[in-house]
Length: 145
Image (cartoon, rainbow, N blue to C red; front, side, top):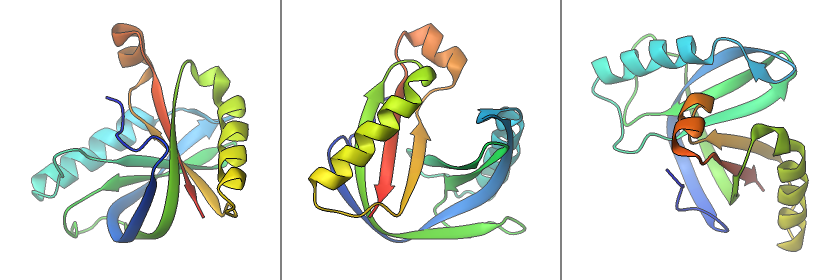
């Protein structure tokens, strides 16, 4: 699914998420599926899954990433987080090996808008297996400015 945010500015105020951590090796996730399964199960059991769930990754280390799963309400026992601010978004298509190029393009986009980059979040719309099956791999990069 292509997020409808390409080239758009998003304003979020206390957007609710369940926050968890994925273990990675050189930014390659090792337990992403298990983390998603655990959290999506918890979210669905609480009746807090939005119609189109946004899942963001903050790739803040070579060895792991914080993941944010959008929810419609608080989840008992979950690590809750909220995001607020202004976010610029661009959608990219292609293999994950293009990530460095996409990040540079995103930084240039932010500068071209006269904004200062605070943090990048990544919305991986498909898993690698789904991307192979469907022939497309869309990644939305959200720049908090």
